[in-house]
Image 1 (cartoon, rainbow, N blue to C red):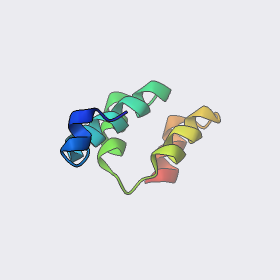
Image 2 (cartoon, rainbow, N blue to C red; image 1 turned 180 degrees about the horizontal axis):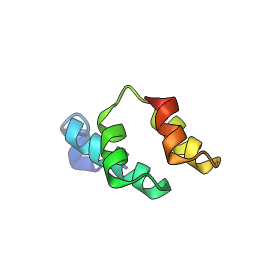
Image 3 (cartoon, helix red, strand yellow; image 1 turned 90 degrees about the vertical axis):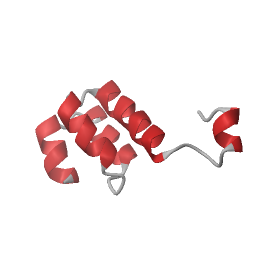
Length: 67
């Protein structure tokens, strides 16, 4: 969720978006290294990355699919 300050400044910074993506990826089970890699790759659909693990895909296979 964006804060009022972020809205007034024109939205979240790229750094804030990457940090949020990292948190989401860690929350579903990606290791720190892989979560950091995927979080920085904004060309990778976050929802797809999350759904792969939630649907039972192994982290290794998910990375092969996403990368």
